Image (cartoon, rainbow, N blue to C red):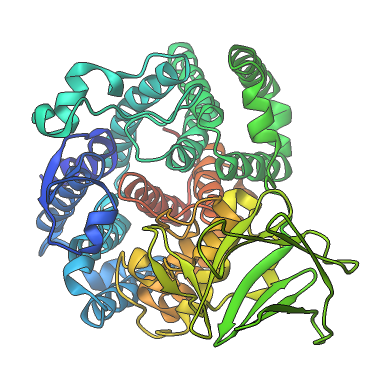
Length: 575
């Protein structure tokens, strides 16, 4: 009975929740940060991607707790290799509680920020899934049933995603427009949800999350395909794995594709003997993936190859940051520039305070010194002491010199002070790399050390990130008004939200599992077990470029618990 009831918890959290999409109306107080994170109309906000996914996750976690309450013999369970995972999971659970207690905004941290809703309750639910899974998922029958249901529901997700890639997006239909607005389409208009042509994202909130989701399920499907003995099952799992691969490349997530490459390389290294034995299956799967890639690339007019082929997308920048001090501003760059203002005008100095001669023509001021030719200032045609500072063709920044001090213009066209923004200078010049992830990391990491022990609190990233860094945003995104709402790095996310001790603990958790897997699985050459390991390993790679999210993280914590349970088994597992 425990296992039947518990199955429902895993089904809700890992299989059903990712597919849920329904509008939730949220009242937004004036000036609230929530008002900047989702579609808002007259103080009412609509979230159709995350809120009810969180509800399903919480209900699933509660069911799991009820299913195992008083039924687990901890003395018996906390033995062998699993004992350290119980300890690490329990300590991490404690740190999550402490992070919430010391959060900068407990109201936000409880449920999370709108559009994400990955707050305290979500993180607690992840730990419930993991810790109960260490006991629950050692039962082979339960494990098989849960994996079959995950395969079924994720297959629906993949079908939605592949239809989106080929031009039919169910989320753009009138019916789904009603669903996404909570059947209040008149208030919020004909809401459509799309990431454009040739993109696969299913009912997840971003194509990057489809990358994290599909990479885990690709290797799960591959394990089931490789270990299957029945012909019909083999064909079914081949088709499923191909569908997962189609969504993996169709979502254009370079992080997911890196995870795929890392997983394939590790599979080849660790399973060379199995590859020789099952070379026909490997060959068929490889040909299917090649055909899928070729067909989708041709259909997308080569857009697929261009997107995934450019892993390090982003040109190198020649300016990095700006600092203001009274009547002076300093622009850090390949050639750092200092500008001094006075009632007589502006003077320009190089990085060792040597004055730079200038030429002014038709309101344009150019610098006459080697290395500074790309800098220019353009005077406003009617507003005195208002300038457009530029570097090259693709970057400019507004400067306003008033009453002996430099100011800038914010995203609402209001005069504002130039903020002092800390950054990791090691990343200077690479701000646009990785779709501007390097910029986000360089400005986020210094914030970690402001509250290093317990962090700033769950899902507080939009509150903590220097949203007033208009220079950096214009430099990296070309838009100073963009809201940066996530870290695009799971490990930075943990450190910022929950503190450095939590980050270290999660690191030990990953490394412990990797060590146990290399020792107990790879040496035994169990195909299914190694593919579960590859699911987790590939997700680990994507964690360096994607953050955690309620639609994907429960699947990861479930697979991790399964992987640990498989490590504990002495015999080979075949599902």
